[in-house]
Length: 281
Picture 1 (cartoon, rainbow, N blue to C red):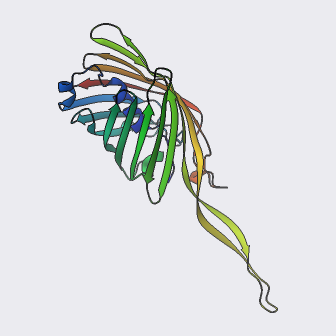
Picture 2: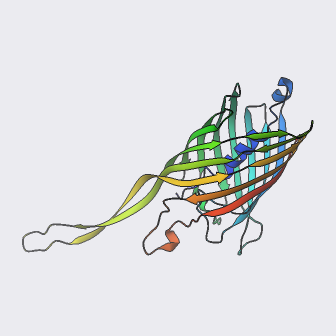
Picture 3: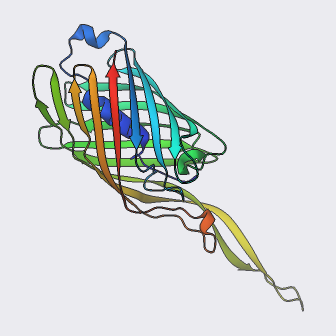
């Protein structure tokens, strides 16, 4: 499969969910079921910095159901915009997970993700059939440290790890308004599936010369996939939130197939941003 971001859609939504969850809620409020909806626009859809040839942007509404402060399910249909398509439905990403916070010192998230992409989708990540993983963040006043691991399932299985640093800045503007800014830096790594070909010469027999054969084998290699820098900004007013995340991604170790640019990964250093509005009920 072609690989991507942990800098992708799902982790961004997980981060936004954590930062915007009201940590001043009472125990009774935390235990009740909560429904959230949001509308989001991403200026540069990418998968660990891998992009499609049309440099697509995307719009994705998101519906979240939190059974309490820990258990959640969500779904996000993705609509793609580019020079060849306008607001074209590409598929829906669903996930379920368990998020825990240990005395405000450790934040963890265990999740299962299942996308349902259209067969005609040109998105780089459309080969993904399912993903599961977990992240763990050590929270402190100086810099939060995050580590995570995941398994991605397509025709084959790939494994990924991520590590990052961030520092949450929280400003209480008034009794009903909170501003949160979270400068972050992440490194993403994982396995990549590819094929390699080489010439093998067979030995001759008696007076018959040997011959050369082209041998093609599947291979897997663990590489750094991308570096990413972002600064999510959230303005929360009661149960209404404005979201803005500027980001810069630097893809690494793009897979190339000699003489076949159509089969090679496309990627580039790029700035992109995600805008969103969210309401909780």
